[in-house]
Length: 621
Image 1 (cartoon, helix red, strand yellow):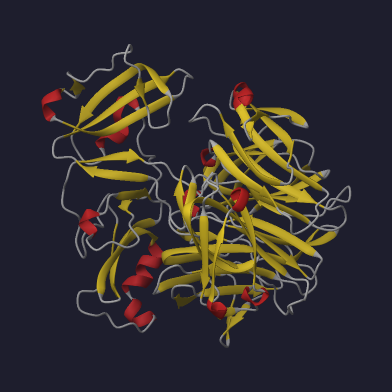
Image 2 (cartoon, helix red, strand yellow):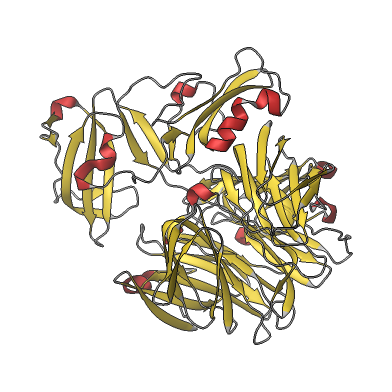
């Protein structure tokens, strides 16, 4: 799972890059568990002849340790090459996908852009971006992927936003690999190699708040930014409760929470590996517009952060908060049909100053969003600038799914409903959204506690082929919604990245809630959870998705799992098991004994005919 130090949710970082003075190399290994791993980096050109390594060897009697801790017992391939990113195709691998944008440098704040050593693979329709600005007298650079529309808007920022460029400022987009490490012109040529680095996330539970920050190790983080959302026309009720839950494997961890709202600052210790902290009710975002209600959480050790929100003593929901280094610059909102006047909401949180936001409205024809005396219809775009800790909430009494949020710097985005009419019952819905750049293509959806579930599948681009394995398929350009039997798990495959949202439909007295379904590429080796005490939920469960032949290695708090049920599903020639586990009070660590084995996890709970919650236990973005 992803854990971090602090709670600011920011851009996705997957790869480190090195400038090789000599040659790039690739080594392919097989571990004792059958897992295939790679070692990629630099090597002396004296050891490379005709693209083959002639000196390096792996002696099996001296078993080599990999980064994940697995023992390597067999070397499958050694190759070398010269040229930028050439070893992404080493040892017969496909390399980067053909349907992609450029590979771009991705450093949020750096004094010299030529020293940036982090890259991201951009989506189609995106370019490489670099800009500079002064922060407290220091000239800092920001590099990232950016959509073409935001590139065009940023290059004309002086006219659009009225900002006057100062000497030395630059804003520049380019569209070839590794072109954004200098301002105004394409990067100098250097032989480069990519090296994977571990990522991490944090969890946050809230509704109607804006920022969290956490920093990460082993998919946990220490910096997180987030915010909480409140629906349109809602008054603050004495029973409203906004709770941040932080957990860590290290019981000496301390966390620090800060927000400019009411000069909030608080430091707490994670006694017994976890803590629940109530935040001021008025910190929830309200109505439509700009406020300064971002929340930042930092920690001394990696943490997982979740947010829980309780409204009017009648509705509870939760979400998992992403750490700052997993935020992005492009999102698609997912809400549902609001009930009565309790509308759909989209919350945006800025961790950085001078962040330009572009919102493309997706709304039913004949309806519109009004802001500052102007009406915005379907397809219309409105823009604004947010500074650090500032938040912006979009609200309307209609479904806003598919509304696009783009930015020039990483932001956090939450979306949902104050009270949504998932047929038959009204409940609060909210989720912390992953950026489009980190969406996946394959998903296993666990069963629902009710007889019926609703799936909303949002494609990243039009004309996406989506298949619900052995059920149905379609060519989708906008959101695809399906009602399905809630007793079964489902496998989903998209030929382009998608976001899958699962809704529990009111049935068998189970209230509705919504949950981001992790893609199989977002699974982790371990998760840290805490059952909340803010509500006496009668039923609290964990769903674990793992390949069937690996079930025996799963442990909860060091003990063998004792699932309530196990349902198997076959997908692309492999068998997966979906386990249903009880979640007891307190903190829990769920991991596989073999490092490198990944599995998915979601948590949920409910009180019959009353409240329900659900969230992914982590997202390894």
